[in-house]
Image 1: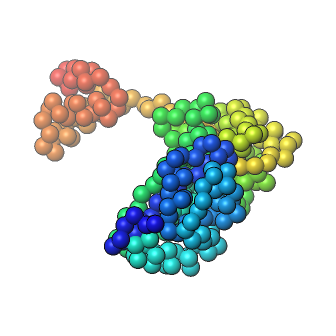
Image 2: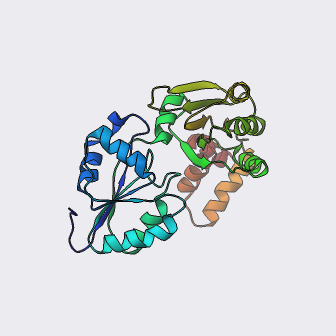
Image 3: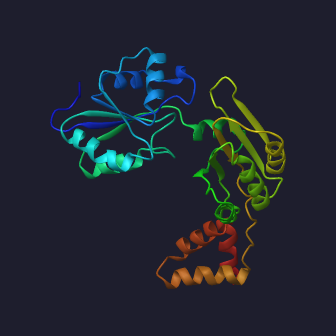
Length: 283
């Protein structure tokens, strides 16, 4: 079954978030041909294979947070022996707030090729559906479970200018939204994405304060991804004319040409080059 004889290969499978129709043909092919399929939940894997009309002929092993440390060496041994090993989680890409990173790292350290059959990701799906800026974003995964640690983390993120993507458990999302509204301000735009690609998919696009109020009145269920707008860019204070001249002089003293020094200072402060040029030559 395996495609390599001397050494095996680890393939990360991007599994559907909920709708089996999102599975790629490559995912089907790898599930059918793999020597070993490591699954976060073997029952979900069985159900997915049935929905896709795929027969998993290889050995199926469970691989989840509770056993990945002890299961990883066995999988690496199989890879060294030439096995094609597929890793699949309950939905989305392995390693992204799911089991996988430990096995990927161990396989790479053992000199085993690692590749992926890319597929759905809750991170990028929620980001695209949120209606918030997608050109720059950061992913924070799950927030700390304890309130104090969560609030500390959020205070450190309050000034982040990129759109923020978070995962949260349904029973903690109300407290998380309350803390988000306190740390970021109740008017910060956000989106709560629930049950993506499933029958009861729901995307609520509201300010954090309104989402916190909604969660307090509701008992959200299902997989939840939060998308929060970045902090407004702080207006940078323009340096004085003397400070700009001094900055150019400092770069020149360090060996830069006047032209390069002027260009660098202009770019550093978001100014037009000719404006800095005029200041330097007027002084």
